[in-house]
Length: 154
Image (cartoon, rainbow, N blue to C red; front, side, top):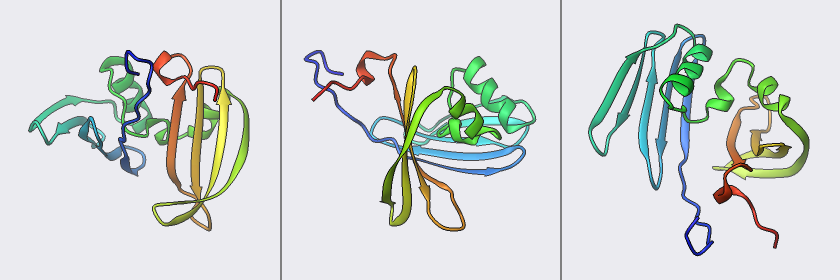
């Protein structure tokens, strides 16, 4: 949010590969941040290629525990973390007050179904691939607590 009140949106697409119960690689390449996130069941490493900087720390032995550790102890959120938990749907729907099917969509050339949900603090949208591999293709969170995230009526 600019001081003038104008909102700007920056792109920060991420990809993640998960091997349960304890491996993750996630890459975020965007307008503001480029970061690689590695977890092997023992260590968590963050790498910023542009600055050629990295940090490594010991981490808990499971993916869910590592995501909590990174968020609570390191103030680091893995790209797409909300979708990476073993009980992701349960966690996300717990705080959801309503939702609906927006309709068919195409994400990066893949036919998908667009869903939208509302919660007290966060609204979120997810695009799920159609067919026999219903993988999430896109995910957007909008916090209602941050003034710069709130939508204004048109």
